[in-house]
Length: 423
Image 1 (spheres, rainbow, N blue to C red):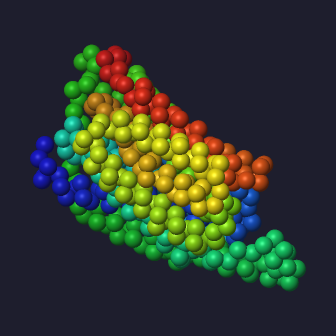
Image 2 (spheres, rainbow, N blue to C red; image 1 turned 120 degrees about the horizontal axis):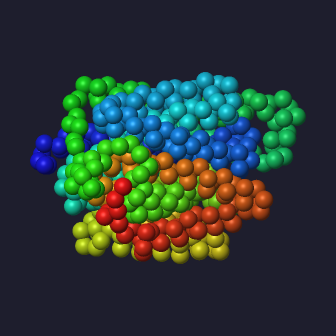
Image 3 (cartoon, rainbow, N blue to C red; image 1 turned 180 degrees about the vertical axis):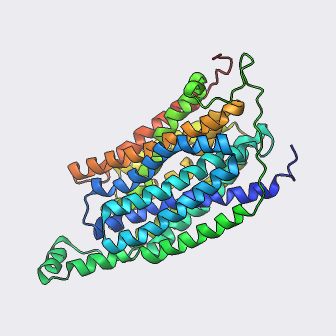
């Protein structure tokens, strides 16, 4: 396969990595913001994450079917269309200050992102030498890191108001009849940002419509017993390393989402940091660390096996969360902010290890791996419940700590393939 032949398609496809990164990393801003605007509990605010990751769970298989039947380009076009529609739906949701309407809009955006992620991850792994697929996917995911650090910085600047009323101040506003005006002011802050997002996605959609992309065929050398592995079927789970990749990805995404989603609340709790400063810290320190971790991890994979790096980074993440759970002030805060650097390589590495050697079954395997992102809907709910019951968002961080334990297991044992299994 000629590297030069696929250079421009590779560049164009990695632009998609920014979009789902922005979707996921704007949630730590939307959760405290809509908690105020719609008067929610921690558990209720976690449904923002749940709506996004439920879409991944429900749409991943249809997205894989579209990609399998109609090719990569059509999958991308479907994804961009849904993403733009969802972004536009946020505007009437804000006007109505209707939380379920917001959740529907986020679900539609995430449905589009599901198509994009289902297509782009495997597409990047096959646009080049199969021996360097993990490195190539980590490189592409490094640009995902750009969206990861820009989302909280831009969201903190253009969505969060910085107004944090006490319970007594809220009661006074209600008594004076000014509460609804204040809440509507908060809700309206999302309108212009999401209008701009919709416009950018439509531009990218037009670019893809008028660009010819190669529908590369995967290597089918791993087909078993002469059977062409093109059937869209859960029989793909005969591969042990894929089965454990799906399980591990469920817990890893739960950990990743949980670490970020309540960071602003955590910063307020352990270090009395206001929401705008907390959003800036998350974007400029934690998410920049996440992005640098991707580039650093890609480089380190030249001298060490990806699976070994996965194991080392999972151990460090567990240790940092122990500190975040037990310390206070800046020690706790910066320990938590260090976690994204080490979790940065986990998703693409688990993904690449899970689909390695699957040939044409790569497409359906990709759908199941994306579907496992439902873990991001479960972990924040568990954290919100623990926070509401204990009145401590810090205690809730036991959830991502436990999730990283599954990543460590995958690095030690679960990644080992069993490709000789027959159907």
